[in-house]
Amino acid sequence: MRRITILGATGSIGQSTLDLIAREPDLFEVVALTGGRNIERLASDARVCGAQIAVTAHDDLLDDLRAALAGSGIEAAAGAEAISEAAARPADWVMSAIVGAAGLPPGLKALEQGATLALANKESLVAAGPLLMETAARHDARILPVDSEHSAVFQALTGESMDAVRRVIITASGGAFRDWPRERLANVTVEQASTHPNWAMGQRITIDSASMFNKALEMIEAREFFDLVPEQIEVLVHPESLVHALVGFCDGALMAHVGPPDMRHAIGYALNWPERRALPVAALDLAAIGTLSFSAPDAGRYPALRLAREVMAKRGLAGAVFNAAKERALDHFIAGRIGFLAMSDVVEEVLTRLCAEKGLVDAAISLDSVTHLDHLSRRCADRVVKEQDR
Ligand code: NAD
Ligand code: MG
Image (cartoon, rainbow, N blue to C red; front, side, top):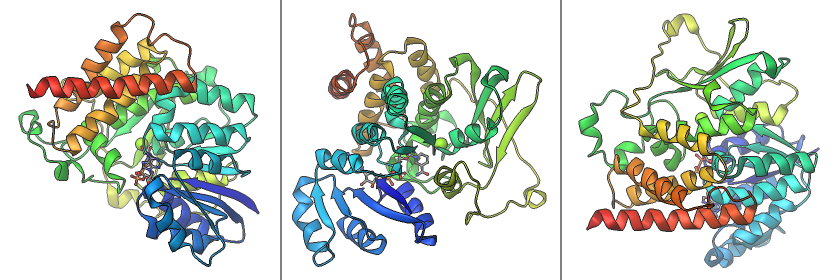
């Protein structure tokens, strides 16, 4: 029996993870599930999988969670601290599927107890990549990629030497507005941006896909995961979302990972690694699909990709600034305070201001310094939005 914890169990990735675990209940013992405001789902999933503890991120919902778990013998807890404590409970495999930088502290706790961390929470790697990698190495723990592109790269690298790798190409569907003229993007609504052509995902990553901030985060994620130099990382627009990534080798070969847009593949690969086992994922009929298309991303259309390159060049805590500013700009877009195109303007302005402050982004990376810069960046983003209002 493998002991499993799922951080962000009530979200899109968390639910797909539970789906896989439920298919082979004899193999897994669930330690902890964590969630947010959806107490009903959290409690019912905890009952079905027999978790030891269920934790909501919200202190004000503790009584509701207790009531929903009454008579089950499952412990209830609430708050960010309680989520980190749950992540520190002995487990063999921990799914990190909280959205945003809030996933960093519990991810570190899971690594500190030596668990394998299946990482969907790309934000933690963008904000604090070297800290996560060092923590894993220090505790003899392992981080496995769950983001589909990074899982694809990881699979293409099996049995290969990094010395033979020339480049890594991650694909982007182009999101909801791929074919829209740029003039129309200024007036995009939250609802329009919250629908993805190929993938069913949480709202935040769906909007990030439309703005290409998701791909920008993934470029930095690739750099941190695979220890690449920025010049080795390329982005290719591929509207069908069937080729998830390609690795280019020194002999000219490109190894592509091809599969349907179903996150249960990447989650299942991380769950079964180093084995490969059957998964409930459809087999592709390439003859029926017929054509796969690729094009270079339009740099003018997607400032997020340029910003990612700037962040990779600066390194240090620039990733923490970039991620936090992006999270806050997205909050403001969802709240209707700024337009779709203004998100990248806000992020760029925050990066400019904070990187100009002497020594700020060059400070040593630790949970404290990342948390500090995360707060500063969010406050700075709020100020930039306010100034734009005037
Ligand atoms: P989601 O919004 O569907 O779910 C997020 C989960 O995190 C929920 O359980 C929610 O309750 C919890 N959560 C939100 N804010 C929290 C906070 N402050 N503290 C604690 N818990 C909190 O998101 P998702 O689409 O499942 O994405 C989860 C992560 O996986 C993100 O980092 C995303 O970028 C990444 N990811 C998702 C997909 C996908 O297909 N959905 C693909 C690749 C990567
Ligand atoms: Mg992805």
